[in-house]
Amino acid sequence: MTSDDRNSPYEDKIFVEPKVANVVFDETISVILNDRNLRPLLNLFIRGNFTVKELVVEYEKITGKKRSDKTIYHYLKKLSERGLVTEVGKRYTKGVKATESIYGRISRFNIYYRINKGFWDEEEYLDESTKILQNFTKLLSSHLDIPEPDIECVRKLMMQHDEFLSKEMTSFMETYIAEVSDITPDTPVPDLEKITIMLRFYILVTKAPKFFKDFEECFGKK
Image (tube, rainbow, N blue to C red):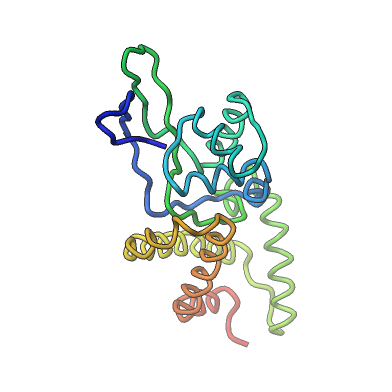
């Protein structure tokens, strides 16, 4: 982990501090979160920042499994590509020209959406999202005994829903930063994810009137 000890043989310079909350749009994020090789690293980063050499040591301590520097770099690349981990600083060792990269988490709290960003309106996902919306509207119109609504209205509603929830949850985390800081150090990543799911539920329930009004504009009243 990084050191602030003046007698230490090295000096750490941190350039990036973690955000309070980060919204991650990724339909396959559960694969990463449940990966037995990657999860130990995610739990380690809750404790602080690390160099690769430190991660090699700590990884073996908590898993009993040895991993090479190369393997740890590979794991870090996967986590970085998913927006979970990044290089946050450099370690300067006295008498050594070369520096070491220091890695850390991008945010204290990740808010996961198991769909890709832009899923509802970007060309790449348009066929898939349209089919989903068609089936959804058909199912609800049958249940509510009303004509099927305009799919584009529902598409817009889903886009507003994703944007609204992202902003509301991020604002919630930033408002209660002290509480977030208190619970994250001792809470495993899977449990943190469950907390965000519950927060999403809470925000939806408390903001239900707004969403219900928008819903009626698409589906109409029975």
